[in-house]
Image 1 (cartoon, rainbow, N blue to C red):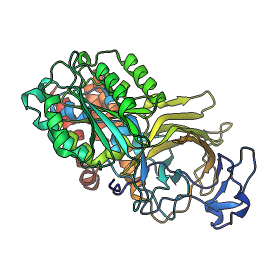
Image 2 (image 1 turned 180 degrees about the vertical axis):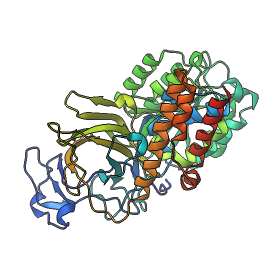
Image 3 (image 1 turned 90 degrees about the horizontal axis):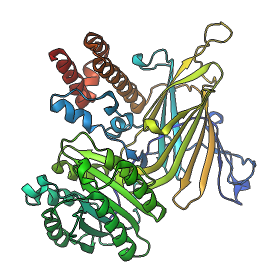
Image 4 (image 1 turned 120 degrees about the horizontal axis):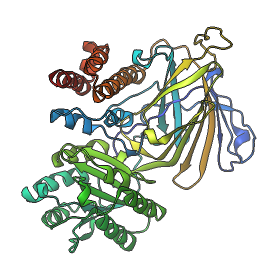
Length: 503
């Protein structure tokens, strides 16, 4: 099997970190190798037993990153604008926006465990996030080296929703898309192709991943089969995987569909339950939708369970590009049940979280936020989660300014290894001296500014306040540098303003 090319990870934290996990008899041999302000206390015992300080995990060149799974796309926004339609504000999803960009933070050393969190804390928050006075970038690193690492072999059963667009093209677009999939597969991998038809199923069972001629021929047959129903196709794919997957192979269903509700064969909640049942048997679901439809609720639900991933392409031709850019982030899980608990320090409150699905965020009445994400995937792009903190006055006194070394928040991290073992850790966030902020922090500030402004403007326009929406868009504050770094977002901003002025 071919080694995977460069990958990167996506969450970041700072200072003291305490881990808890499985038994480890070598704790006493650890050495204090780190500067005082970058120490990480490791504890692999089941009880509160601390080991000597170890180097804090910092993302190093040559390591993979991670990506949050789930329905993280933002293509609906661009598709709507291209069609001259102003979309709903909720279409702008931070996790989908950040997934389009490589957002690296500072890198100074290797990561020694499956998942390492890094952080940067800045006193310069995006203007649109006022009254926030602190901006935090959280990102991931892994212990997977770029050189010499290869993913486990997998058996992918492809469920193809043979919609009229594929029939019209005689299967050519599908074959082109699957060329992108095949480029990431090797001779140890297995590929099965199924139609989602109600009464007929065309199957090419367990073709080798490099048997290009075999699966292209099967893809053409599947694309020309009639009347699709995705739910039934997924059931057939799961049964095929259970019966024919070689030992040691990961099992995954890939659904390619236009996403039309009438082609799903079940309600979204039923599809989610179906995927949850499959996850319990070790089968993950990747769903990719293509075309101009804006309602992909069924596919998003199907890919929302443990091990699930969701993406969208503007056309079938774009599906091959997604495989080329994001194959690992759609097919290779890194960890499950990822969770963060963010507890602001006295005098501060968490005012914003950007980069995970909104449904994954829960607040309690003490101001603590808890994030829960079903799956983190290995990723070529270094992604991020961004936080904003606003000051709170104490006893009528002015809020304390953000000072170097002062506590901003404590973060508790937890995740489940693919083996089932749990890892738990805590870390204190505090501003650090920094001569130059990372590219990821700078770009994240600009992207959060864009996201907040666009959402606020679309919300006002939806409520009928066109003048207010245009005034908000005028506060974007982007210059030539931001427009050049983010041409797609810059064009969307201009198109949104033009559409609002024309209505």
